[in-house]
Amino acid sequence: MALVEIVMPKMGESIMEATILKWVKKVGDRIEMDEPILEIATDKVDSEVPSPVSGTLSEIRFQENDVVAIGTIIAIIATESEAANPKPSPAVAEAPAASGSSSNGKAAHAEAVIPATIVADVPAAGVGRVATGSNRFYSPLVRTIAQKEQISAAELESIAGSGMQGRVTKKDILAYVQNRQSPAVRTIEPTATANPQPVQANTPSPAATSLSGNVEIVEMDRMRKLIAEHMVMSKHTSPHVTSFVEVDVTNMVNWRNRVKDEFEKKYSEKITFTPIFVEAVARAIRDFPMINISVDGTRLIVKKDINIGMAAALPSGNLIVPVIKNADQFNLVGLTKSVNDLANRARKNQLKPEEIQGGTFTLTNVGTFGNVMGTPIINQPQVAIMATGAIKKKPAVVETEYGDVIAIRQMMFLSLSYDHRVVDGSLGGSFLRRVGDYLEAFDARREV
Image (cartoon, rainbow, N blue to C red):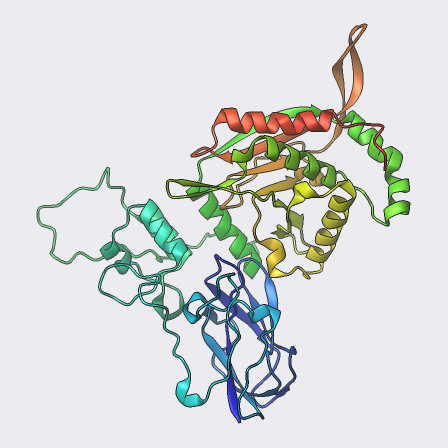
């Protein structure tokens, strides 16, 4: 009999931990290859972890709702063979860096081991640690925030962590930064003690009270908590600036109204305005590539691929952002198929982890909710996000060869929120205007 370790899979480059939602199998259950063992969740997506081998589940090391670091052994499967070299399933194909990987980024296959050779969950030397002489682990995100906020190693050590084994989470360090006394107003008391007590980052604020008592307290669901943390982190990271333009999209609206039935009959897809917006954004990004970047300290990372995320509303009221990879390489039919497919599977919670990763620019349609404009929050680590407002009929001045006339036109607002550390008003405003120009110049005689 051989024992095969099941480790917490790596679900993306920035994912350092995952939450166990549900064990589909229990100790003693028979498991076939590729059969789901458990369900996990990250701040990106929920997913099932399939078994890489056939055998019997002999040990479960973590319980439901436990937060587990990537690469940690979470279960043991006993197989009937003396030695096993199973082919990993897609969900666990990417192993943690500590276990070694090949030159193309693919991790080595998982191998069965006997109990005496089970590898302990110890990260590679130096990974995630600061030079304090301790063995405390810090995620890359926590270390980045500490660096930006000029938090010393000793100060970082003093922060009480709410994560597994006292690990400092993003929430902990952001709370600490919020409660931290500003160096500009910090005073030094002559009688200060040699060992001052650190500020506690996790001190709960007083609960809100109601004089009438006519209230209902609703706990945030897991996704809403993650969204809230991500939004706070984004505002903390990037100084947001928002620009607006008003666009005449009469040609686009008239074309879509004219061809929508023919389009659906020919391609079996309903065409909305979203793929047209994506097409215009992709063209504008090619014109202004410095809007398609991310920031790494003092370095700018210019993305050659144009991967456009589109915010999609879920039945629960939460949002998720599936990504159209290489959007500039699709024609309008291809974009329509991609938009419809991702939106439908998002609503059914059927997106794969890789389909919500790798975005370089995000588009959100606030017009869906009848809003004429919005000021969206940047989807980190991107540096810009565009919102499209509702299309409304308005009287507008139209220039003709016979002079200016007032006519009823289909008008809408576009808004662009951008990271003012690296995107100034000239770039942000010019990019947004270019998107508007492409929409206004839409060919009303375009063939389906």
